[in-house]
Image (cartoon, rainbow, N blue to C red):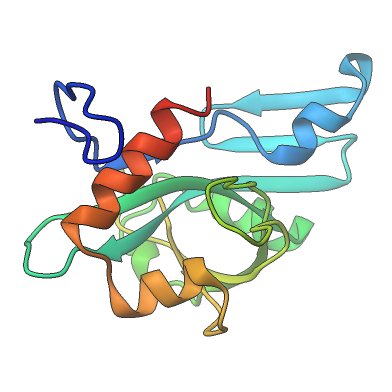
Length: 162
């Protein structure tokens, strides 16, 4: 498949892109960083983050496009999500409020601090992140879906901005 924007060959069209750590992890001097373990991060024993997925429907396709992102939670909700990590039925937990803590630079407006709700999934699955229904382009895409052409555009933007 060729990138429609630069004609470079794409071996595969990824449907999921992820960020290794919350944005704020990179803004703190290293000696003050505390813990980054897979899907959880704590900074200075004061800031608590969890990784989850923003799913975006692909129009006329069964697949979904996924942003693997970080959200900051209150300490109480962070600890509760950790307590339920291996508990069957945890998907019945009420959603947690959080702030998006990942900068997705392909969007014209910052994605930092967008309001979210974190929906716990069954054991073994990362939480689903639902954005507040605003006019932010990311929220609009989550609500309305994107075309396969937009997926290709995202691949182009990510592959050529690194």
